[in-house]
Length: 254
Image (cartoon, rainbow, N blue to C red; front, side):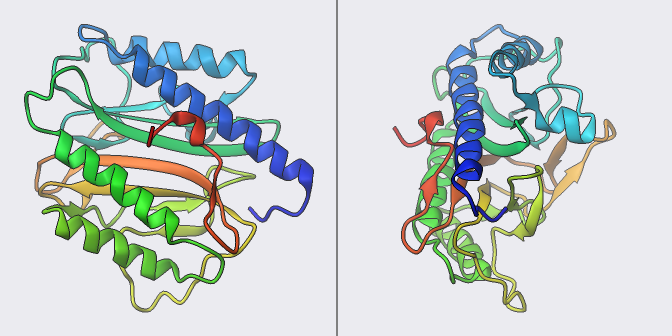
């Protein structure tokens, strides 16, 4: 959305603080032996305590408050009482919500407990590439150029990007224009980031796959060639200089 008033900015700051805090607390709450359903319920209670509503549940009827993807699930993992977290699991939590007519989105991947499967390099690449991408965004920058930066940095780290998952505009709804802030360059895309707009920038960094495919449950996405995928996402306000990270309460880079 385009921020035109102080009230709109305050609205976006508030909902972004809520989703960022929820993500941070859920990550801290995740324990070995816990089900993803229990972790999701905890996140749902936090959102309710702020008066916020789960965006995927409200928008798409998603069967959970947050998307919790484990190991080879690339995105949109459904919380389940049968999915029990284990030492060294690669976990992604994606939290988005609506509060007072404003919407915000953030997510992050992490390793639970000891990194016995060596997932940390993939997690670090995703997190660091997102940071580099965001610091290069300002009004007038081509969306395609940021996609090129993300893919180039992934390749330097020995990884790939998922090409059919993307960042997006956010604000008055969960997904707005620009709809496809991709993790690679589309040369024909002349669209530029606009000052005073809010967007969700997200990295999808992969060990083997370049496309996410949907499982029979109608939600869960996995890589087309297997392997693992990490995602990190922040909602930002674009300026003439370095963007304002509205979801910084998630402590992603602390």
